Length: 107
Length: 262
Image (cartoon, rainbow over all chains, first blue to last red; front, side):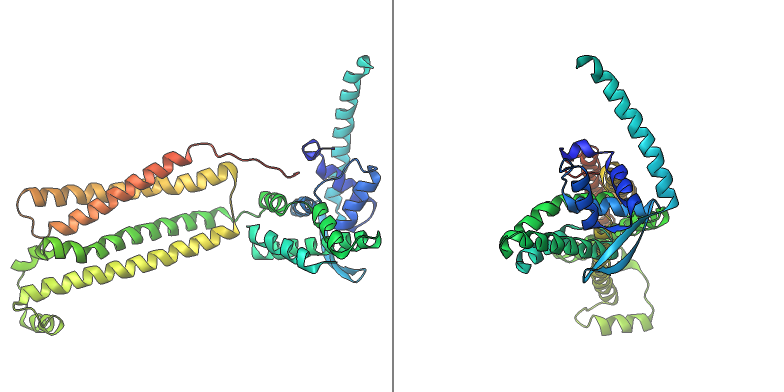
């Protein structure tokens, strides 16, 4: 998947990944790649500014912790983040259903 | 893993970041941990240290893309701080222009004569006490008013030099602050164009006051002292022209080619 195709959906992907468990950036990137079976493979460095933005929007909280001998920033979803995830999931499902409906006759 | 390659990447990224020092440090620490994780994984899969570092860097992406993504989420300072910085910047520009005007006093007076700047003071009545002080300050002068004029020219140049240095320092401080906050897009256009427009108004007003005064003084053949008004007027007119060109250029749309995912 090209990076520009992810525009507007990155927040949803990050919120969804972190909804499963609090995690650090590298683990989030690994989870995204694994759960999308390699379809989502973006420049992982750009995940961090997106995580910072979500934290400023109070959708995430973060704290430093030592994991595997390395100091890492662990991100966790807030209640606001859960609400945002629910809203964005509904929006995405409507969007995907609309696209699917348009493509249907062409099959 | 090759810490040299990873270190070079982090240095490159650090140079490109325009956020606050605190935000930059946090991002660099996170990216460093990410690079080490990715390199460790690649090494565990059988790659050499150098190969693992290359894979890790490729997974993080170009430093320019990461910096661009970080710039888009940089924390903007409060509005009153931005307005204050605008005013400081304008003040610094005014000091620099006035300073340049003062610094020009020396060569202009050498070319056009001291009277062109302070000749109007030849008729000023000077008290004996002040006269003695002027002679102490300007021992080469033969008349009291000559010493007074020479003294004022020295002050004119010295004050100009001081204003210039203070203006440059203020401008440098504002630029250093801006380096930690780099507005983008429309905000950047407004930030820079707003300053340029305000500078045009500021310098055009000063030029409108002093330029006619200096020109009329010179044309009426009563040029004594006209140099002060003329030099301020000309310096400010040039500054107004410079900033007018800058403001016009700022109105042109900037080409932006975002490459990062947002």
